[in-house]
Length: 449
Image (cartoon, rainbow, N blue to C red; front, side, top):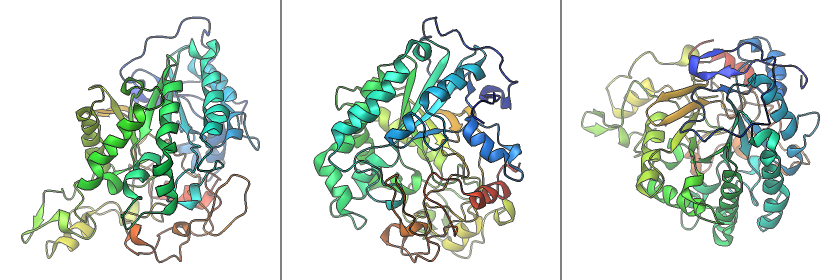
């Protein structure tokens, strides 16, 4: 519960620390920024999520893991429906820290016209409400984080900036077959770029805040015609509204998605009977087959277009384990390239474009600092057990719509190759607790629990 003191996760050791008994000294000056905020630090365990996880059968195996705190509407800043607000989380983080460096993971997610290509994650602000976004959402968050109690403490605030926003401007606009009128509107009015730039500028000015910009995932941005344009639009946003590239600590990929961390049974360079893996139906000419290779390459692409050479990347591994009995133990047969890829791939989705409450998904790698070159951490930014969207229309006061991609009976659209959605049935509104999904993730976890 909100008043319960939980152990923070010590990622550097891959284990949990004991319960902290002392609050950090908020009177001292904040430490200088470090290259990787996760190195040598604990990571805050959200008591709200932890209590829900622990109440599930088997949930105590992971209820002490750190997860992201989603600020997905203005009301979330002060807390809603019994959920803790930002100050309460920061106070708890100070208690958990015991005076040691401690990362607090925030998801900043309320752009005007939010998620122009997926109704399930639509937001409360209309396409033109950029001023409201600045003054009623970003400014209050920045004000709280700037309070000396938090800014001059041992906390390291990691902010994940606006999931799925900037990639939509590349892939879902103009003459693309996946274009939507809503995304065309957001590209034309510039409010995604302005909003992200404003958030980066205001939050990045705080000494212990580390901004990570969402960069989609390999099954979205990995194609040649999406890769560099996405890097360019991120740079455009990072230099808008007074921001600079120096206010970006890195990127985060696979947030709230399911793409496998590492496919071991095939590579993009393999061929079967003279046909390359890139030509398989699953890979479909993508240049990447998993998140680790994509994150490392996209991080370098950002450096190539003008970002500092020391920027990092986070990979959300909260739902990309794909374990259990369906996990292949080796490559598929080399009868043809599709048999080879489909027989060996860990990612068991019907199509890589399926993103909502996926059946068969499992917990991935546990949160861990500096696990690979260029990667600052594996994180669980999307709290396991929180729904991606409702499987049928559910009225709500959060601005969230009904997206057919969350309906298990839906037969698809151009974004998922007109395949079935692969979604679990009876799902609640996005962000609400979904016990069936949580149990699915436990059952299919890889590494196993």
